[in-house]
Image (cartoon, rainbow, N blue to C red; front, top):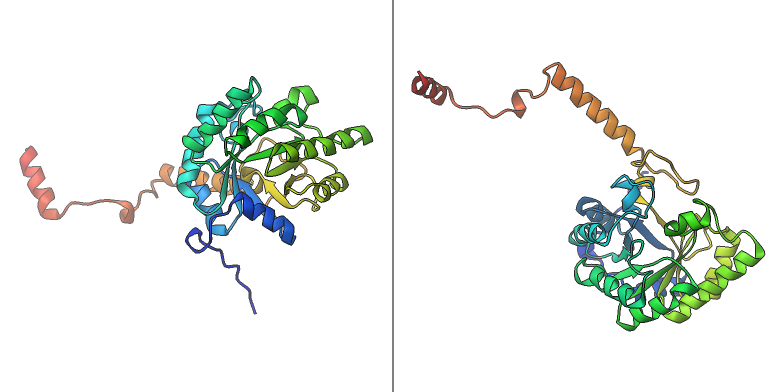
Length: 292
């Protein structure tokens, strides 16, 4: 007897909120999150029943082709955020604040966070960093904007970290990560991404703060999981992080389809009669008379 997985459409489920996140943690139910940068992907993620969509600054690498996340701008992020907001209604939508949109001053951080809700259609924002971001988190949450924190491997600090490397692997670094998580919780963050952090540390942090943790390369002890959709689907060929499970290889599927199209056009098998618009014989005859 076969079993079929039934997806839940957005029209059938309630809007996911920050309260939903907290309730899921309290009940021990995993939180699911994926990235999206466009309308059709957002629709598909929503239809699948995923809890939350992150319009991630990973956009810079997997869609725009930059070497890292640093070059992507607020305007680019907002452009893609609006597309996602048009496609997904039920998931909690989180806009990833890009490099230098919140580091200069608390006032600028607050203004740019507001743009994600006002111009981008997001429900919340995410920013990287621990204690050094506490004032910005307080100001943004004080204005009524939910904030998701991000600790561990923080890609916007890739040069400072010396590359894309796991964090919190020493006792002192682990203690600092725990303290940063507690500081962000106290500052008002509603949840926290833990990226490339040792699994036992991520689980310990998850148990010692009341806000949900969302892991990426941080083990199963977190309250939820997030992946970059292009990694999950096999759409980004440049590299695949160790912590990614690839559920499809769409890059290979696309390459096969494009090659078949190329061959069909070259051999004149496409377009065939069924792909072609035609005139009636009478109209064609009338046209020939007109041009003679």
